[in-house]
Image (tube, rainbow, N blue to C red; front, top):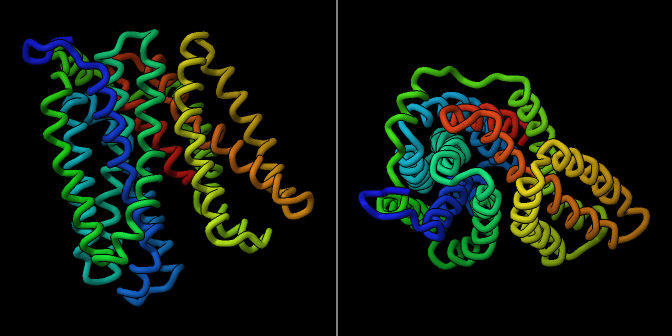
Length: 348
């Protein structure tokens, strides 16, 4: 694919997309990991911090359809730069927030950055990667979210203890901003005809897209519950130590890194997106039952349920986003992704 006379470097292209997904969603886990520091610094309650996280997700959900539509009109490359710009500035604003309400406002800015993640990256894949080769790229870029979560859990606490939570978040924001350079160097310019055609079309509210939005809403509730409450459930419901309970959540996220790739490759190869999503939903119910049964039958059920949910409910995005690209086509991939993302973030 042309890019100023250069062919597309698929490895670098995929890496930038994964980084974009990590940057778009990084503020969420960062707020969770740094919660104790933020609460102590600003003198707020845990409930008030929970409202900050809710405002972050709500802003992303409400902005998603509009951001998706804009993505189609300006092209995936500019939208990808927008991810890094808005997310980076938002994290820097969080680091500088002197009070509670300004913290909420800064979190909402990063929420808008979150809403651009899937529309921009899906648009770039639909335009620059041919059908039949999108599964691996989509799975890897969706796994960028889990890599970001893992990095937040590993790096931010020690950094906050050493230099404080505000400098830590500031450094993260600056690092995200610098990734704009990678987009300019690696990501090809969108074909003019794709942007011109997108400008003529409205948002895709077709039955398949609406079905995926509803599916994403339910999976958002499941994935959000797992990532937020599994450690507390393990500690209070089964008497696990804090490190072990955290390990359960961490390994569930790590499983999702690989299963997102496997689900995407398998479903594209067979062309069975609906069947794959049905299997993911059915297995999620079984693994949820294992989580519920854990206090009665033993800790092993917690491990089975958490790892299983990581492989299913947390991993549905890669298949769902492939299905969106097939349904919407190149011209409306961004807007349709925004509609589906609105459902998912609403569930979260």
